[in-house]
Length: 408
Image 1 (cartoon, rainbow, N blue to C red):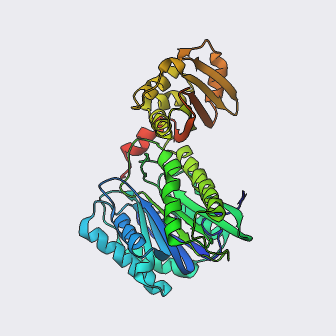
Image 2: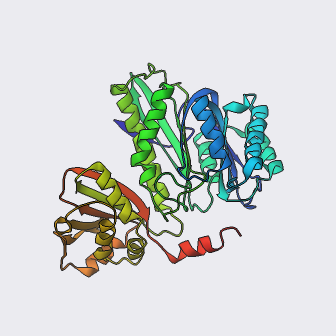
Image 3: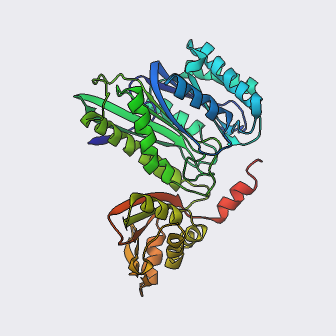
């Protein structure tokens, strides 16, 4: 069991954060953030599956895989440091070295993350100055964590953070985090950055396994626009300061930890989907009664990624044929004459398809249901017992406007 608490990346013991204005791209808001731990943390990470990987992804992946430990993360928004070659990698090292000097820690204990325009080089004079500004501002307060969550936004309209607590080995254990993500979001990691902190005492191996397994049902089930980013990164740092006996095997304590981690990552994934570029609604797709979990995942992802379905959600139009069509090209064998489809939201529930045939339903009621800020489509395949949930958003005119002139 767990409880939600106020806060984000600074909620767990041992973590502090800071934000500043560095003028990297945006001239009217904070655009750099730093997370810092009082001691060396065990570190886990998962990264974009895009073959084109940004320099920070390569830098972090090496530290996480070879060292498995870190003490600080420096994040900038505005410029992605992607497609920047050897110079981009050199700038990662220079950022880490600047942080190491400012914090008095080794450079290879500093992780870096960037988000923004692809193809531009970082202005290292402003990055280095930003690091020097951040170090003395570090605080272990909820407010500092919130400021950091705001500083990493690009086209996001709101900061995204969450924290929960559970009891492990008689000790209160906290898992918290912050993320950013609004566009270039698609399963198999997206242009989202997520930074999770915990004070759990857990082995490096189990920390990595817990994260690797959890993203399959959380971040990898999010799609805003079908584009898989060059920069997607999820980092998980464990300070061990909760005081629980080290979790070294997959028993009850591990299960409690993974449940708390799942709650944090699910909440952040939903926040990303609901804040998709130009979105007016979170679109959730639940597939139940599938023959296998693999089938359920494919089916739910297919519907949540369908541009026609997303446009129908924007228009509050219960165009159920679009959902059936998206199920049909998901690459899953099923009987279309068994499928039931239901829409639900805070305004109610309405079944629109039964046994593959569209019902005569109340269009006014359907429109009211689809006009809410969170809309769910439930597809019952009647092929088995497996289920999966994917998250996305509606497709609006504003999405095109945002991305037509993103570089400017």
